[in-house]
Image 1: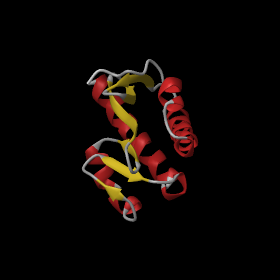
Image 2 (image 1 turned 180 degrees about the vertical axis):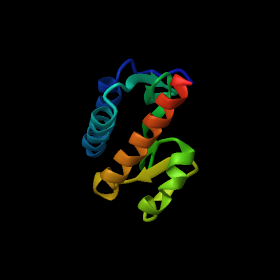
Image 3 (image 1 turned 120 degrees about the horizontal axis):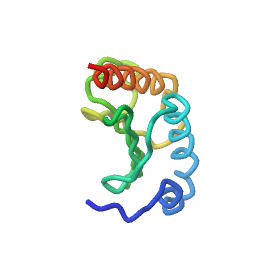
Image 4 (image 1 turned 60 degrees about the horizontal axis):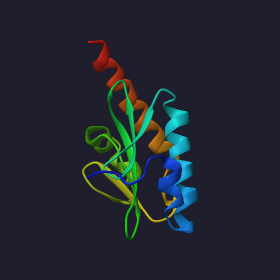
Length: 121
C-alpha cells in the first residue's frame, strides 16, 4: 500500500482532533527513547527503524490507535499491557491514558538494543 502522506505532520493533520495529541506523544516517546530511530512513511503510517530494521509504527484505525512493535519483545512484556487489546505485534488503545508509557519505553529500548546487536554481528 502506497502512503498518501509524505510526512508525520501530514498524517497527523489528517486525523480526528481527539487522536492528534496521542499520536504526537507516542511519536515523541519513540524518538526520545531511541534518538537514532529513522522516521518514514510506509504502509500508510509513520514507521520507525533503527540499525536498518523495524522498531515501531503508529496507526490511527477506525476504533482505536495501534502501536506496532517487535512481536518477541512484546510477548516478553505482555503482562504490562494485559488491560489492552494486543495482537501478536500491536498494542491497541483508544486513549493515551490507557497506554503504559514506561512499558512502551522498555519495549522500544530492548528492541533497539537487539537491532543494534544484530547489526554489529
